[in-house]
Each structure stands twice: as structure tokens, then as C-alpha cells.
Length: 65
Length: 409
Ligand code: HEM
Ligand code: SF4
Image (cartoon, rainbow over all chains, first blue to last red; front, side, top):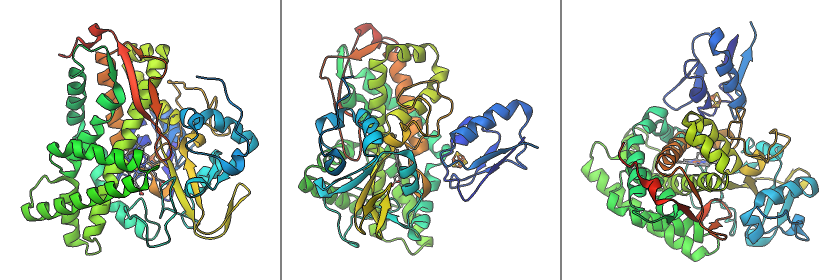
């Protein structure tokens, strides 16, 4: 599984940081991108899903490899 | 809660934001509006269009070209362009908005907010200590509102002794102001003068830890587009956007826990659930209704708007739309999927959301630790504010005296 944040949609709500701290990284303004290539370790999949389901802007996509 | 009323006659063309039944329980009215008049309008208080469906509210929030932010007040006359009260970035539209927003954003990131947690926690503990041996307190007046005032004063670099004055201005501007334009103007004048003076003092002293005012002054040295008026406007915004909103949210959470003992005991037993519960309480009791002004003739859900007409975004109505949320009108404190709009949507997304969440968590943690059992003190012991910000203005709670033991960890 991989996650991808759409920078055009992200408004920096930071819900993803609350729910899956290791998968996302914020810049100095609070806008967020996925860490590295966005791959989600097996034991982080539920967290990734929660981030997707709680992002107010629907900016995060979870992609099956 | 009381029986659902029928919507008053002509609500679709003459809704009243200050109708006492609407102020006390807008949620019931929205259920009926979704079925009968999902977009209402009214000429009262300066006139407005009121959509209550998630899709309409989200679409407007995402379309700043058609729906300008130049006037955010829910009530009062819509000033002509150029005559508005400017509080950048919240009253700005693209293209100015983004640069102004980026001036403030770095001051509100998670690490910045974490550094303020101790201040909030100490203040919360002090406030509970001050209950003494009383068993009935007004939790809105004696607890909820002081936490954000203290934190924001610190962030702005304002001396602590000015806190009480702040508090009064915020009440004047946002609680009394919507009904009394003169009171509102007076508050704005006072706040503006205060910040102009603070800017002058801080420019002189150039102290290191001068908070937001100092940070903006420093940025101005490198970014010449920032005027004194811009800085005053931003301070005003931080003050009004950061205080009243958060105290309303803390108060609504306490009201819910006072009236829902099962939820309360569950959180006392399982504090790890608090983060999830706070999101749900934020969803269910989203305090903010904010205005937009049409920039051109348009329509919302089939209701026509002329250029200059106001439309309101009641975010709690979007959060309770069954088309967007399962069991939308129920409060489920373990709800895991929660894409709520409480902090807005789109380019104006609340800059203070990390701060608000921190303050809410600190306030509720301290309260539940010290006062795990409490209830409404009597029949009419809560009054709600309306218009732009909904929350308990008065919230009398009763608890056992023994509950206050445990102040020392
Ligand atoms: C529970 C508490 C809070 C709620 C519910 C809330 C809600 C909102 C909402 C709905 C908006 C969007 C307004 C719009 O679309 O026009 C907003 C914007 C804003 N909020 Fe908050 N807010 C809260 C706390 C705070 C705090 C603590 C601060 C800190 C100072 C703050 C500062 C701001 C600012 C500066 C904006 C404007 C952002 C922009 O225009 O780009 N808010 N807030
Ligand atoms: S929750 Fe969504 S909008 Fe918020 S920071 Fe994460 S990706 Fe961006």
C-alpha cells in the first residue's frame, strides 16, 4: 500500500499527523506530504486508512500496489 | 432536549438567527430544513441566505472567486466594498490571502503549540482550584473562557494584567456586538487602539520573546507589503478568532458531558479515547457560522443570489447532514471516521486548529481528573449564544465537593 497527498487540496488541517505520525511530514507552514515514496508498512495500514477517512479535504489517497 | 418543533411559518423566506428555539437547538430545525427548505433566506439583520446541506456548504467554502470573505459577520449591514473591517487573512480573498496566511501559519505549527501546553494546563488547574469549596460553578464564565484568553494573550505578547480587559472586549465584539452595532464598534475601536500602542512599544523594546506582534514586525523588515494596519488587523483576528471559538467549544463539550453521563464515565475510565471523543464533540457542536458575500449573480441550491448578497456557512449543519455522515445527529464519542468541517474547508481552513485541539484536550483532561462527576445545576442553567459563534454563555454545573480533591498529582 502507498499513500499520496494531493498538494493542491491539502490545507494543513494536520489530522493525518495526529493519526499516522510516521507516514506524513509537514513543512514550516503545516502543509503536509507523504514520507518518502509513501509506502505504508503492513502494521500502519489501519492508521493510513484513518488518516484518509479523517482528512477534511479528502487530500490523501491510499493506493494498492 | 425538548420536542422537535415545527418550523415557524415562512421560515424559508424569513428565518431568524435569534429565534430563541433556533438558538437553543438549531439541530432540530436543520433536520426539517433539509427536508423542506435546504436553502432558506431572510431579510432580517442585514439579510442572508442559509444553506444547511453539506454539499452546498462545502461547495461555497471551496469557491472564493464567487463567494468573497470580505464580510464574515452573520448579522448587521453588509458594508460596500472597501468599507469592511479588515482582519487578514480571514477577510481576504485570493490573490492577497495566501501570502498573508503564510505570515501566520508558522506561528501555529504543532511544535509551537506544544510549547504552550504548560501554560494552558497551569491555568486550567488554577481555575479549578479557585472553585474552592463551592459545588455549583458557572463553567463557561469561570473556566472555559479563561484558558484561551490566557494562551492568546501569551501568544500575542500581551501583559497578563490586560487579560480582563481583553475578555471584556471579546464579549462586547462577538457576543453583544451582533445585536448592538454601537457596542461592536466601540469594542473594535478599543482593541485597535490597544494593538497600535502595543506595536509601538514592541518596536521600541525589540524584545526577543514578544510573541506574534514581534514576529510580524520582524517579518515586515523583510516583507515590505505589511502595514501597521495589517498587523493590527491580524492581532485583532487572532484575538477574536482564538478566544470566543475555543471557549464555546470547551463549554459545549462540558455541557455534553454533564448531560450524557455514560459518555462522561467512559472518558473518565478511558482517557485514551479523549482525542477521538473531542473530534466527535467538535463535529456535533461546531460553534462557527461564517458569512460570504456573492461577487456576482449566482445561486445556491437553486436559490438566486445577487452580487453583494450574504450567504452563511453553518458548519455544524454540514457536520450533521446524513448525506455526509452515518447517524449524523447522534454523538458517538468513539466515531473513527470523522471528516468534519468544524474548522472550515478550503483556503481559509482554521489556522488555530492545532491550538484549539490542544486547549480542548488540556481543559477536558484537567476537568475530568478533578471533577469526574457533574451535572447541570438546574432546569434553565445553560444559555447559548447565537449568530457567528454558538456555545454556552452561562453553564451552571453542580458536583460533589469531594470531587475537587486530587489537585496535587
Ligand atoms: C474550537 C475552536 C475553533 C474553531 C471551531 C474555529 C473555526 C474556524 C473556522 C470555521 C474558520 C474558517 C473561517 C472561514 O472559512 O471564513 C477559521 C479560520 C481561522 N481561525 Fe479558527 N477556530 C477555532 C480556534 C481558533 C484559534 C485558537 C485560533 C488562533 C488564533 C484561530 C485562528 C483562525 C484564523 C487566523 C483563521 C483564518 C484563516 C484564513 O483565513 O486563512 N482559530 N476558524
Ligand atoms: S489531514 Fe489532509 S488537509 Fe490536513 S494536513 Fe493532512 S493531508 Fe493535508
